[in-house]
Length: 69
Image 1 (cartoon, rainbow, N blue to C red):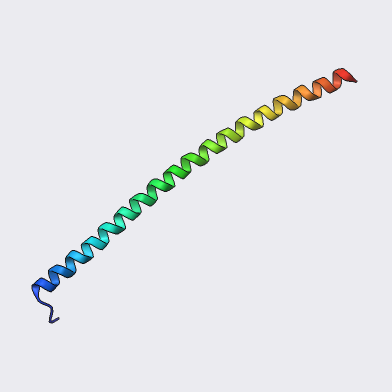
Image 2 (spheres, rainbow, N blue to C red):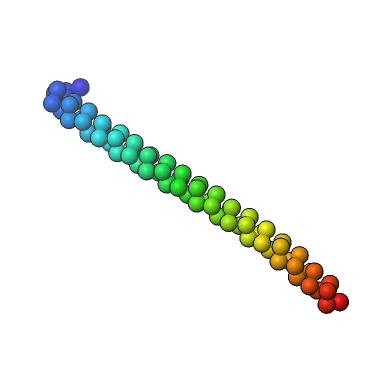
């Protein structure tokens, strides 16, 4: 309790800076999470497209095999 006003002001300034740093880190992490979420969605769409192509090719292959038999 023996802190002077200037010491209290300095302590407050330091704590305020630490809080601001935390907010910046939080915002950066949220942006990164959103970016990774979008990337995952893109991969899922791409994977879905590959699955559809696979089914089409499988059907064509089966049809060709039946034609050969």
